[in-house]
Length: 120
Image (tube, rainbow, N blue to C red):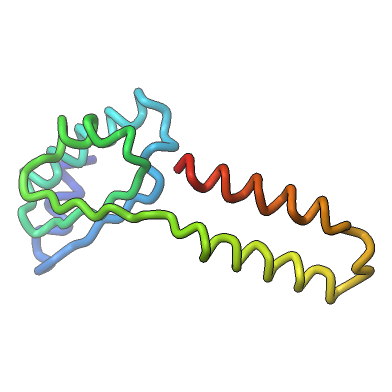
């Protein structure tokens, strides 16, 4: 399959392959995919990869794909998340009974979302 893929894309000037949330793959599947991507990039220099994932898989990515890599660190902005979650809860209030979700529940939801986002 890899040889066929490389042969197919070799006539295209530039090919971009994007994988989001690499950290969500099972480790054995991620390793297999990364080995395949390494072979594809080695055999087809017109291929560009764009991979996203949480920082804890960086060593594994480096193991397979270090040549020519550019790393972009994305920092979670707590203010953006707070505004987004608050707005969504306000929008839900507009659609129905605003008393269905008391303020203490809204605050708990917002606090939990911010805590979870900081773990990313």
